[in-house]
Length: 165
Length: 380
Image (cartoon, rainbow over all chains, first blue to last red; front, top):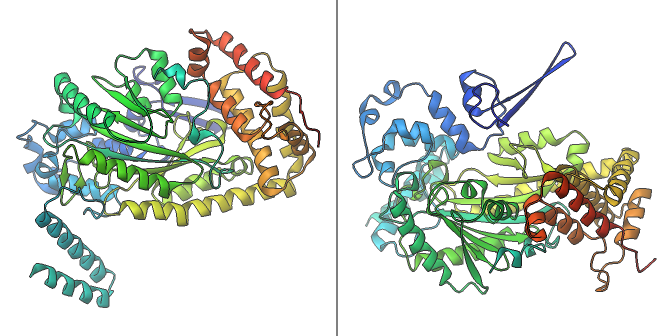
């Protein structure tokens, strides 16, 4: 069924209000829900939540200065404005170009984590693998210090020193 | 392979077998990947998309997966076929109704599919019956390695496998299980489940519903975080913590139904039985709703030794078991068969032509009546 407000998008949010013994139903799309400031339970999968979050985010100027706003990716021409609209990036290089803005988003989406520690492609050169191990160790060290696990932190610091040799 | 080769029976991950199958219907793991040297799909022209499609299709079709594989061109497929593929969980709705050159490689046994040009260049998935996430993980990892021998994936040392949406970056892994949670619903505790899932940063989607509307009390539960965690950790968390906890909740609710609300339980099961055995017109929504009660009754008998009057009556029908002459005796496999084969696209594909909604409702009712009114050959 179509959204009752804009009559354009599919209604994916169905609200039922019971007040004074009277029951009213509303069927709206996510865009209108945000525009009309209607509270929505967060059963929406995170991609959509994030796109919406981005759409209503205070201007990044306040957080990061105007630099990334005016940027267009030299590889694909993508801009942050387009990302806000579409929710998906233009090319792998965008992760580099818009690093600052994306970092905040990535942190939110992945329980505060921002470094890969899972599977590495078999073809990855030895140097890169080593680089990644070091990055991971450093991130673990940071977490250990924050959680005041100084014994673990010392172990990690030693491992890092070894790897850097 | 034509779609009609697989459309008139259930596939192996929906056959009711597998560990913990009374609550965990199936397990699924998917990996998202993009080819190095290409833009993400939103910025690709149709000819670039075709190039990606051809490349990936050729690589995947040439793999040794221990099963025959076929390719379906999704952008060229008739609408009915697209709906069929979605009903069978072989492609997502996004893929079916997306834009541009795209397709899917399907293994004949349907344990593996590879969507090409969905949201990322490649999304591969492995499905198994019951709770078998470790096995899914082993298998999909091996397939990923095989593909990686022949192509290069976009990968960054910092962010891992690069995906179109940052919410999938890193491992690109989506671990999910399909859960049957009728008792939590009946005892008014399903909201608790949603809240618990949210607190654990997991996504809950009702099957075929929008948002958390759950047809047949079936829910898909998946991880959301994909970065900063290893694939093995995500799987292990599901197997060791999340699934055992949910099973405990659902089983407790089932016990509560037995001990405190057995009249309500019996009533639901008997009404479901009566309607399914007799109705001449039944919508997909109603059929799925009622089949959930039968599924619950059969599982409670088999796994909890429940024996209320309605459950006993139900069991008397399902007691025919493995008799090869009575293939439609009532078992979970039969429930699943009725579930899948009476979905709208399945119905029409197997019938051979499109049907309007009333005809579908009549055909559905006929198929169900015929399956549930078989004579029980063994009266124990």
